[in-house]
Length: 176
Length: 353
Image (tube, rainbow over all chains, first blue to last red; front, side):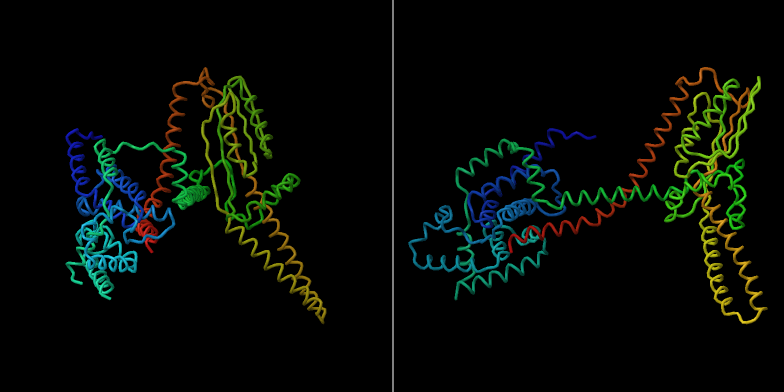
């Protein structure tokens, strides 16, 4: 039987804490986009970090980087929440969410931007849920294509292709 | 719209956590995520509701394991005690079965054997197996008669038939011998009881098992053929037109009747040997045969060691059976694991669709 030394424990915690600091807002952004409800997003984000903390020793670096692993946990927690609630995710940001509207407060004085934003939200609404998830992982959570591939369980080239198609569809919808 | 503009707009749409939530989560993180209290029972029920297949899978696995163990145990049945043959039992071989030789030795027990008819039916679906056993007991010279009585009492308790018995006692020893026929389904309990008789110890014990299924099938086939031929001869006799033909057919009919009667006797004899197992019991008194140590009946170190060894043997057997059952189950689980993961992932992702 082996005992884990305090030094090893501290190192494990420090690595996890760094991951937490760098990913907290990204995980929340991704989960909130999936669940479209702030309270549920907060619960699931907290749950995802708790699970990741408990499982941190089972993390295998050979199977991908830590952010992809963390987002995999967050994704499972969010999908479980969606299944529990028996409702489908709509990945567009809730217009009633003040946090989201605040983000664009500085640009609201421009009519063009407002129009573009409205067009984008409508285009996002029309995307398939999986496509919206891709957008959330890429632009809300800031994951690389390799990390997205790991989270979704597809190849990196497949993730890039899917993302490219989604962006083309989004651009076309916005320009229409 | 340019790509840069689109990406900038998408990034601007990114939800941001409330400061209060972020601070709360930071505090929990700083405390290394202390577990939140949850009622255990509710959690278990929640788990069951979320994973309805869990109890079903567990039940299926348990049933499979039990079935496997039962199948393994049943497969071992005919081999039990089959290694050693008891020369003293004088059980006829399977080759002798077809001769109908058992008829003469069973006449006195017809009534008793008739009672065993339901017993015979019990073996119809299984292979026909003839079992016999021999138990040699040692006893103090003064106790040979008591042990002999105990043997008879045990025989009565298990509805056994005493074919023969002889008891000889003398000052320096004595001997008793019994030839019993024990209902086959009670053989093992009867042998266990004989091995535990008071004032006696087991000197030797042997079990013998013979598969007589081939002989049984052969008799049945012979009987069916003879009956079919008899029906044909009877029909031919009804249509016979000449006296010679009639005489010839009558002679053939008589021969067939004798053959049928012989085959039926042989079958009954075989049934009896299958339904009743021969057990030869010997009780030996005196210095040589008895060898009953003084103070017999007291539990000593030797008995304890023997019991301990037996317990270890049984435990090892259980472990081997469990391993044999679990190994394929583990292999199946390993093979099924990727499928299970795929199914879980797909079920989760259905929430997106």
